[in-house]
Amino acid sequence: MTALRPLRRLAAAVVLPPLVPWVARWIGRQEARILRDGEPLPPGLLAYARDRLGVRAAAEVRVLVVEEVPLPVPPWARRLGGFSAPRSPAGLAALRGIYVRPPWRRDRGVLAHELAHVAQYERLGGARAFLRVYLRECMVEGYPFSPLELEAGAAGTEAEEWFAQR
Ligand SMILES: [Zn+2]
Image 1 (cartoon, protein in one colour):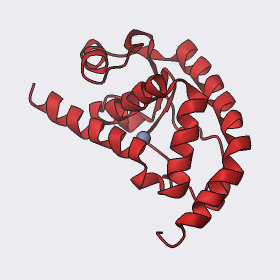
Image 2 (cartoon, protein in one colour; image 1 turned 45 degrees about the horizontal axis):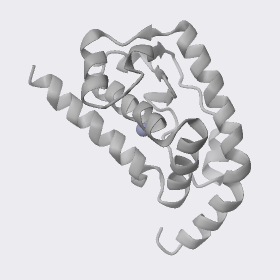
Image 3 (cartoon, helix red, strand yellow; image 1 turned 60 degrees about the horizontal axis):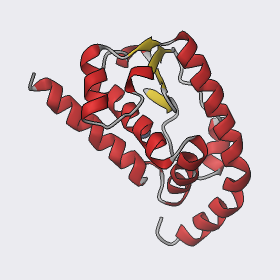
């Protein structure tokens, strides 16, 4: 991984400028679908998102349960790009929209993980700004070691503990 880092940086510098706007438009389309068809957060999670995760638009967030979480690029292309993301993730955040698969529809850890990504979109200033950082991290550091992914992972674990105490 370390020896490959300069190569990964180079690949990111080449691949991301055309990829980011394309994926950002895809994210925008997914958000529109989720906001149209999804459900608002349950009250406990809404308060948690607003007060503990700092999601400014928590009341506007919608969650859409889907059998398969759609992904912007096919698995072979993700491998080619160095993305080691899971083949079929439990959830995905698209701005204020969250996709979640049926087994995790009420899983506060998974939902808090995705809500942490919603907060990251807000903090970084939208889909393009988020994707510029996030996709670069995934390509250079690898998906499990991306700082934004680690932050969301920690948020999910903290939420599980927080709700388990209540
Ligand atoms: Zn994540």
